[in-house]
Image (cartoon, rainbow, N blue to C red; front, side, top):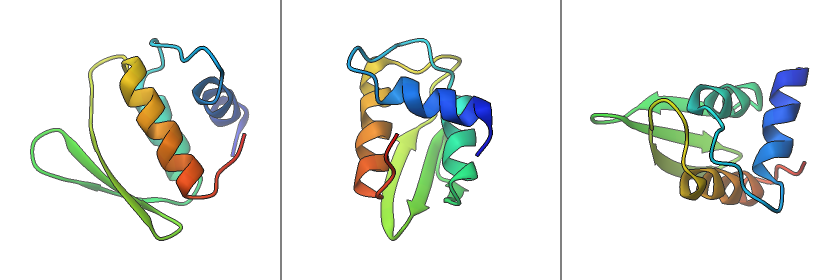
Length: 82
């Protein structure tokens, strides 16, 4: 995981969830953690990490707070900590 991935991870787990994180940064972090990322129907993305699965809607260009929280919950469930 590089410095950019670390900043994205820290931003996801802050108390005040930012709404300006780009989805490509979140997806890059998830891929760097070794997740299997597959395209679903439309703009859906299916992610598997440490036997945990989730489906996300790929927002454009920035991710809303709800999607950031969902990504954070998924990462926590998969055992990822900041």
